[in-house]
Image (tube, rainbow, N blue to C red; front, top):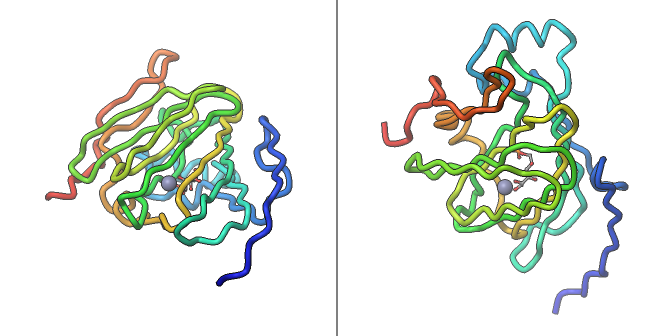
Length: 194
Ligand code: S6P
Ligand code: ZN
C-alpha cells in the first residue's frame, strides 16, 4: 500500500489567491502571441514593457487519479486593442474530466467551447461558481477594472492540452465596445473540422 499523504491546510486571500503557493506561474504579453485578434496592439504592448497578463498560484498535489488539484488565478485588468486580458485557454489532456471555477474577486467571463465549436459563457463575479463539464475547453477573461481572482479545482489526472487552442483559437472573443464587454466572432478562429 502507498504511504498515506498528509492533509494540507491552505490559506486563500480573496484578493491575491493562495497565500503561500508551492509554485507561481506568470504569463506575460509575450506568452500570448498569436492569441489576440489585433496583432499590432500586441506588438505595441510588447514594446511598452511586456506587461504581465495573469498569474497562477499552485499547491503541490500529485497529478494522479483520486486527487483534486487546486490553484488560484489572478488576471490583471487591461486590454490588447479592444480585447480584454485573458488566459491562454486549454482542453484537459484527459478530455472527459470536469473542473470547478469559483470567483473570489473582480469580474469576468468563463468562456467555454467544445471541439465541435459550440460556445458557452458564464459571467463571473464574487460568489459565482462555474462548472465546466467534461469535454469543454476553457478560457477566462477579465472584463473589469481590477484584478479578477478565482479558485479552480480539477481531477489530479486531468492534464492540459494547449495545442488545440493555440492552433484554432476560440470561436468568440470578448471586446470592449462603447464601454461594455461584448462577445464577438473571432476572425482568427479556424474550426478543428476544417
Ligand atoms: C487548470 C485550470 C486553471 C488554469 C489557469 C490558467 O485546469 O483550468 O488553473 O490553468 O486559470 O489558464 P491556462 O489556460 O493558461 O492554463
Ligand atoms: Zn482546466
